[in-house]
Length: 500
Image (tube, rainbow, N blue to C red; front, side, top):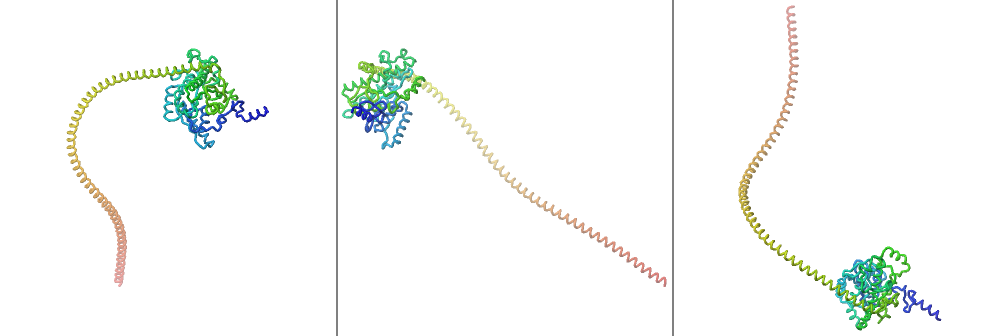
């Protein structure tokens, strides 16, 4: 019977979990949230533009929660939002997920102030806060406010953000569902079992060197701080009687952009170990569980892993350390704010001094400019007078030129008239010449015709003369012949008479 019951229980559990709540290492976000309806819930998620934060935003928004995406990289945030909306269309949801992007840089107290101010302008109640963002094992650096980067972003930034939003969450939770604050820590708190060095938190120029170990030690300190913060915050909320609870969790070992600053050696480890890592959907499942599961009502100050409660190491569960850290963090923030105010005041004083110097210089420049202006006005007046004199001279010259121009114009008119007359004469002469030329050509033609006629007449005369000559010759010959004949007749007569 026990075996049968065990088999039946295992078959019912999701993610092959072997725990009381049915969830485990391989449980996904959708399996954890089930059919929970989050309609009307407003949830802030830091770092929701990638990795675990993006998957958390997707899962919660698909169950009608209104998500505030608090992100430093706005381009990635917009891309993540579009991706989530497209997934909603692909799954044919009957509503559009509500996602609002507000810029937030956890490495800047000023940016956090601006984020809270912009969120308050939305006039929304805040039901759930998920402190998801973080950096891991980066080389030493400092935030805008002078904090060591990993401690400053992973812990102090979220601490300050949470404290600025607490009043909203408390008032929202009055007479309503319990508010929840979820802080992502890590099993990396186990790397340094000595815990946080409160006398040297930043480790600058001491234990925080360029070695890989020191970078992981700093990351371990920030994750220990996350767990201690959740414990002390929850204690204070319960003590105050607020209807808000706080818990921390370890999402698991997952390959996300959190490892972007790791060395090549560490990245090789991530590549080799990837088959054994959780998926993003499995890693974000514990966040969804702690943020939404009804079984965790009135549960706070705990540390979770694989969707179940887990014991943190003693240095991360020490309430005395938690209280000390809380007070030190408040002092660090207050000092940083005062320094910022002093710097701003100094800057303002410097700006005021610079403004005074600028004003003095401006007065001197203005005075000099006024002198120059007066001198310039005098020069301009003198120039204007000179110009007027020149204008008068020019006017007189123009008048003379005008008279000369009028005379010249009249002369030109006369010349033009004369030229027109000459042109008319020339045209007439040209016309006459043309007529003469035509007459001459006609005369030439007539002359040629006359010559031709003359030649023809000469030829005719010659022919007549020739004919006349011929006729004359003929006549002469005929006359001669006639004479001869007559003579012969005469002779014959004479002969006859003689004979007679």
